[in-house]
Image 1 (cartoon, protein in one colour):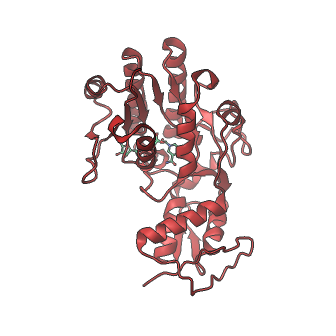
Image 2 (cartoon, helix red, strand yellow; image 1 turned 135 degrees about the vertical axis):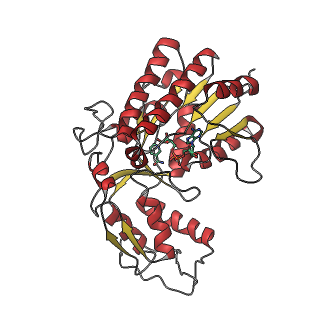
Image 3 (cartoon, rainbow, N blue to C red; image 1 turned 180 degrees about the vertical axis):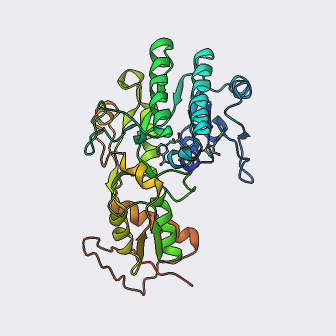
Length: 341
Ligand code: NAD
């Protein structure tokens, strides 16, 4: 039987950092190759420094190491993409075309490539946005993701490449910083809450967006990639939902555990990008085809983020301090946060 050999491109990014750990667990570290344009973290094994835009180098790696699956995570995200539209288009499209071509020519087993809710535009339904609807993105990132979805479908239909994809909402995590997206505020706000007790948000307080906690996102990738080929009915990209909240909702959820935390609002160009996206996503096809179900909601995500970041920052959960919650609908359980200064 052929052995699985997994190449993760963009492994040092927000998703790649956690997906690499999960794939190591599933396949064994000896079968995982992490690659990124940035050099490895000291001591990181099975790591290659690679520019995904170097097609020949990528093809050599795939051939020489006997790669059977590629997870392509290298991309320029929505906010950074608007600052350099040519570079964003080039990276996002060329990397995908290169990987799809290699997957076809070397008969790879599977490819994973993430799309985004950024494919939706101002004309798409705001609430419960369905899989098939009016899709007219108005950012270069969204356009590149929509074009990429069509390329995935093309390579599946014309060449049988088993490429699978998810339209991720904004992702929240504590291991690696986010890479320049419109929803990055939802990570930064946690750090600032614990370090300064204050945050200035670049979105308007009521700008509600679809979001997901990273453990759900990583599990979704594994479940999609482990599903039988015949159960995958969407070959562009699956809608996927976790939770939806606005900055003021997240601020309230954090304030329930970090009393006195306050947020001011200074919306910039990212608020305009966010305005063009749906508030919530309908993901019935993913639920039907590969039994998708999110586990984290706003409250459970907030508790886990605060707990993990407290550990990371050397803050303690102090049992002697009763938590002063201003929001009784966020019961405190045993989570109490006190900053050591
Ligand atoms: P990120 O910016 O955190 O990570 C991308 C990684 O790719 C970085 O480590 C970067 O060094 C690497 N990279 C960039 N250019 C490269 C090149 N030329 N060659 C090799 N590596 C290169 O991004 P992320 O948040 O981990 O996102 C991964 C994928 O998921 C992207 O396709 C993104 O569009 C998609 N996505 C992310 C989110 C989110 O909220 N994070 C939401 C929707 C979709």
